Picture (tube, rainbow, N blue to C red):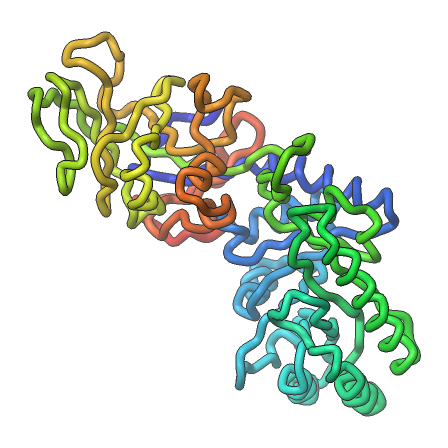
Length: 407
């Protein structure tokens, strides 16, 4: 159990949970002969990229994946030397620093390839590249009709010594539904592109396709390398009825009670008075709002609750920018809540359903909002103080009231 927070609001990240999840994922991948790339983009899905990266590497990942060159640079600046793939680039982006620090580059277009080649010439070393084929997501990736021309361009740059092809890869559109027919179709298209690339370039290349859901449910799609993202953080990526994997949610989003007060019956609470006290009520003010990552729409659900002393307490009225109000029950009731008490906005859960009074979770928030838990954890805002825990103790807590969310 972690200590009662001293910050007004913080995201507590359990790196032991990260290690557990990565060990599980790497074990599944390893049974298929595949390596594991832990995806730590978007500041490690809001969990702290550098801390998560180190924990993931400790637990059996051998690669790291990010979206942007800045995210890759953060890892390198922190001394993380493992292979890193950065895959989404914008026009006129300077890749020289990435090439100089041995960051692998996702290449989806002639523009990407030209930028990588220019960076390699400037850095004085070949750019390691992963060629992305669009197999059916219709997002980033080279269209199949243009694949041959891209390979010809790559071959010329290989001869010049400025690029080093490493892999052919793609991304699944329906992996959260393991039986969806597009998965096999996309895998076949990847295999065709991979064969064409190895033939044209005359060298062996890795192939990678599987995200979290496919890592967990489709070992036939593991190929040489899997790229789990959300499962690293303990959140189940698979939709529909299924046996849930043994994942441990790593983030607890928590605050403190700032004020306990009694409000007379018939009074409206928070903006717009969408909730009115049915009688004299004790209310708790919690200093966490939509500027911190508590979506405003949660206040309209009528089912949004927080955990105080292990008891679910309903949030009443609208979520404000900086605060929410919690109903503690009839005035003078024996609720035991005092100012300074810990408030769990969401956490890993305690094995009980919300109906049974279980701890609120990020998945519950997502269900209430009609979205996905990815959006919830990455949406934890700029004010929460990020801490990490290992086992039962808090380590490397940041100092100050609102320091930058870095490791």
